[in-house]
Length: 197
Image (cartoon, rainbow, N blue to C red; front, side):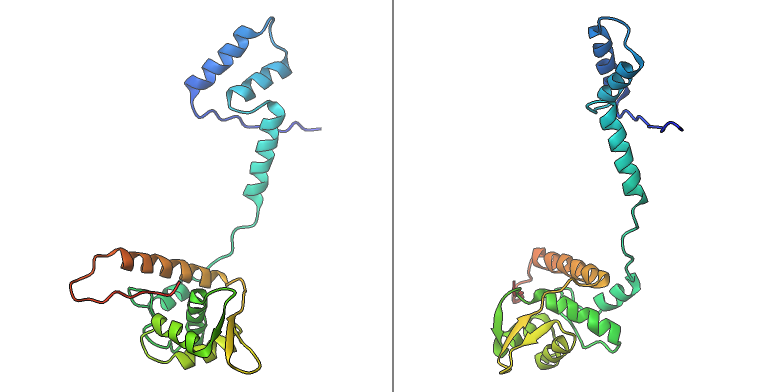
């Protein structure tokens, strides 16, 4: 049976040596192989050699784990270009993929778990875009399954779902953009934009 190689890394050689020397001084006799391994592990910050071995195995498993999902950065960039400095959608995108991604960004601005009347949905969408067509946005949100409407057609509710990787990236960029826009000092005479939370 082959022996497992367990790497030992000490962040600070001086501290490591001091802790090891203290343990060796406290030992009544020359330590056995296992005792010395435990001393070395403790000097490196572990409880014992088993703890060091378990930490090494966990690190190896994490390193072998599948890479995080990839993001189409170009698509995110295209969608981000459709939003102004305050994070509002400037125009209805011409490409379907960019439209869908932009709708996810609007979905993120809808309150989770709330039932809204059509007028409230329209008012909220008006604060999130600049081309004065909340009805189109509402219909597309419904079509993409991001918004649900009651049978009477008067009440709407955001459908909870995990956004795709590109949508999560776009939402993060837009939140940062909104935060930066709110942090900037206003020019005199300018009216602040108050995004719905």
